[in-house]
Amino acid sequence: MMIRVEHLSKSYASSFSKTDALRDISFAVGCGEILGILGPNGAGKSTLIKILATILNRDTGQIYMADCTTDDAIAYRQKFTVALQNSSLELWLSVEDNLKIYGKFFGLQGTHLSKQIDEVIGLFGLKEFRRKRASELSGGYRKRLQLARSFLVDTPVMMLDEPTAGLDPLAKNQVIRLLKDRAAQGKSIIFTTQVIAEAEALCNRVLILNQGRKIAEGNVEDIKALFSAGQRMEFKFEEVTESIVREASSICQLTGKAAPEQQGSSLLFDLTVVDEADRQTMSKLLESLCPISVSTKDLSLEEIFIELLKEGVV
Image (cartoon, rainbow, N blue to C red; front, side, top):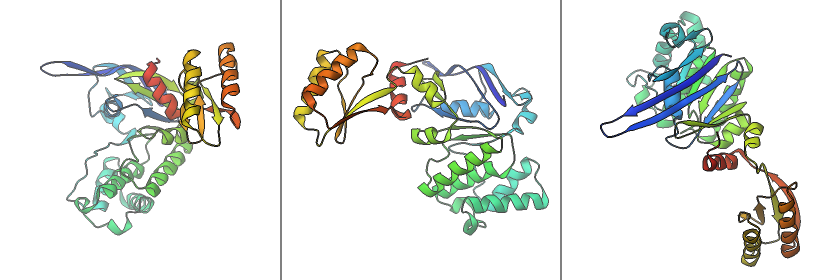
């Protein structure tokens, strides 16, 4: 494994209380793998990235990156690039000079550095801003410059904290494509996001945090397996009227099932086709509601994410 994290914990103390930001977190990321870290605000996502990037100190646990640990700080920091939500830029320097300083930190020199700078400036649409100071850029273009630095150098690990936040749709798609390309080259990538659909489209695996705890980890199918209602039954109608909703809710209440969710002209029920009680409930619903069609509907990662947060699955 390129990255291995073992029993990582971090807390913050104030005069009045102690907050556990991370509680005994363990995971691993292989070469060519993209791990998405998901969780609500305050889950510990940014704290985790900052500890991996040696910006914050851990309380307990160990981090291995390739053949070294954070205890060997110089070698460890040469293994990765990181783009934080508020990565510092030298605001009084130009876009090009910001990239030069960053590249030189990783040992890039001369024509190779110039070539890499030309490439990332092109990739992130910064050509017309090349000579402008970073302070003159809009928030979205500062974010592009932060990301351009991460793609400037060739490290085995890339870490990005909400990399698409603040970007326009075209730039977001570009970042996702570039990350897929880097993973295909064998890079190990960790990124946090609030956009669940991005994680579902991009990641090999996801790690879900809540209140500093790991509540689930695995590929999307693994995560679905942790949640018993991996599918729902979709009843489709010409129109979902109030009387249909009332009747459906009444049947579900009498049989101890959750009330249906309306999506357009459909009602979604948390029912399976293998449970006898669910089959009886379905029979009553079919008889009373007379839908146009009935089909199974897989839960999206976002729906499962919400359910896992409710359930606190470990």
